Length: 48
Length: 230
Image (cartoon, rainbow over all chains, first blue to last red; front, side):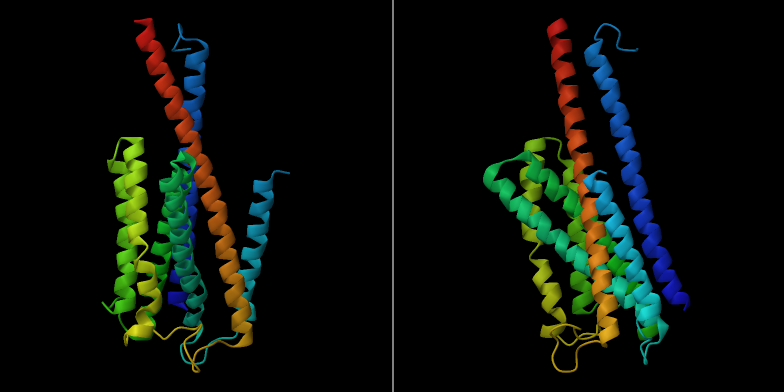
């Protein structure tokens, strides 16, 4: 029973960890996209 | 409702049904006991590592024939998600092996060829990280992926060609192979749930890769504008 529990725990932990990293990467790239879009729209004020 | 949300819901429902079938509906195996239920996760994960390679090779071949960058993106996404499931297959197999064989690992043909597949996945992902030129990265990783896929038939046939510690195949393994009817139901539900989950993750990963490429294109445009401004 302990081994079954361990296997399930490892499987779901790895899968959720992977989904979490995808979500983090998606968020990071969307922030970068928004920043670049802003830079292209207002090239003279890149900081805003 | 978006198609992707509907697909996620469908995956969730099938996964719940699979978990019910694995833990409640399917009978407990007489020799190994409750630990045999790892089988449903282990075989499904290994199945996905093969499916991912099939996806990746198909898109890699098409990329080499057409040069379309989108196909390379799809192959890369298939490889990355496949690597996760390959890892799950190996780890769940090790956890299953300990109470049944008394050891976590042995270098028998099936396990070794599976480990080689895991190394091929890592090699592919490292290659993509190391190469900076997008064209070179796409072309070389496609070739590497196609060559690496040779390992899949070896894994599949390993416990047919050689006498191994690993059990004989459940499907197509002769007269002594097979499962109880209720176990088949749980097995096919688990396979379906894992396949749907893989497809869902692959689609998300493709979208992420395409967004990344959009960002890189915009960054290049900015560099061109800055050069023009100077």
